[in-house]
Length: 372
Image (cartoon, rainbow, N blue to C red; front, side, top):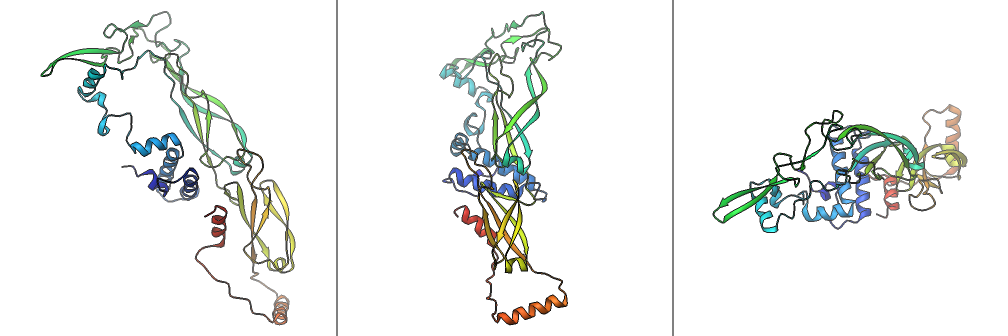
């Protein structure tokens, strides 16, 4: 039994789009198979992704809030009314069979979804690439008719092309006419005597199609790209569906992203912290110079403006936040020890006690930037 999507993301039903996105990012990083090696991590990641796909889409969210996991296209109590031994037929009797659609009417093709993993830097700067997807297209030999070239598609004699047949039943309520899917043509309304050798009468064939993608700069994990018209081919001359490419961003070994800001940590020597220095810091654009003032304490943050992720909609970029950690030397010569003892004696001050906490300063800082 599926868990409630709000429970999966750990948010309330009054959560807004930003709350849902924040919860998804946190859980996606926690359960991403590249990071979490627990046996059930992949299933949990899939569950989180499914919940986010529904709750982040206003239309799907409204439908879920009303029906839950129940398919609104099904009948009462989760049963398909059309397959309940006459219930659907009685419904048709009272409402004139209006629910039945014309089997020969044009219908839009099904949408397709493709999951794609990209590098951290590709998400930052964007990328043009090609992918290959399997899909069904109209058969080029029979042009979708399913019939062998040179032969004709005939109208079903049982239903007259409607795709439905009427069955008369005598009941205690009187004589009832039931409409059901035609048993001869299977609801298609037409018959193919000689099948096309290419598609074997299906009218469609499976192919692998190359699609060119333009991934915009600034996309985040879980983003979807819609490629119009690259889904399954339409039926009876209907338009094709669309292709939705879901992007999964690989974690970076050095950088961590939060929104449009990038975080990293760099080590400095004790002497650099005391005397000050100018160091080189890696960024997604390459190395840059960073001035370390004299007396810098460990866990100090420095901001590199404009070195973060480009804004997906609009101009400008986020910032990079550099946390410096002072490295205490483990091996010293006797002369170095003597100088440090002399320095400690000249100072004459006792370092103040630093309060400890189970929670790192880095986590507190990130929540502050998120406005929590």
